[in-house]
Length: 256
Image 1 (cartoon, rainbow, N blue to C red):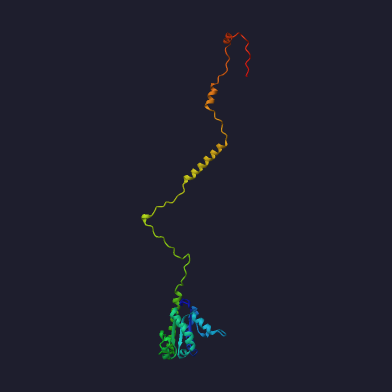
Image 2 (spheres, rainbow, N blue to C red):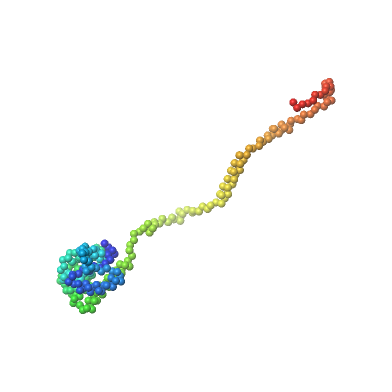
């Protein structure tokens, strides 16, 4: 689990040092109230709860581990086997922060423990029990300031988001050299095309109407000549007929 996913403070201590735990909780109370920071110790285990599972669960959520170191702390087999290894591993692999406070004299055993590799809030030769009240309070103030800066920095750091289809960058096409660019003209609608189509439709309609009307038979040129050439029937002069034949009574002309 990355350090950004860890959101709480885990306090590891010996029950013989409960007075120092109470002093620390008093100084850190404003962080709990005003910044909703979870500061956890085994004092919050409820009756009937599986205490070992709860301790491991809280250590897995810890962004910061605080050790109240004393001879009793270093002598505890449970702390040595169950609490120190996972917190030290989280610091090495996941970036968790470990703060060490020497509450009572334990210089020799402390130098032999893995905690001696960490920079402590106060040195093993100046435990809280040997300080004045003001000096002890000052150490607690330094712990408060350290936690405040750590969690404010984590809150200010924006969370990473997976890119979505909308946020994925679109690959840009390479620019075409000016020498290879082809001028493209936008086709505009031709106003004459509409007029031409109307004229074609009109001519088709006229041709259709002509085809439906029976055409009159044309008068040929030869017929016209024949009509003009037809002679009108004229009566022969009576004088000539009388001279060629004896005078007879002319029969009446019929239409046959």
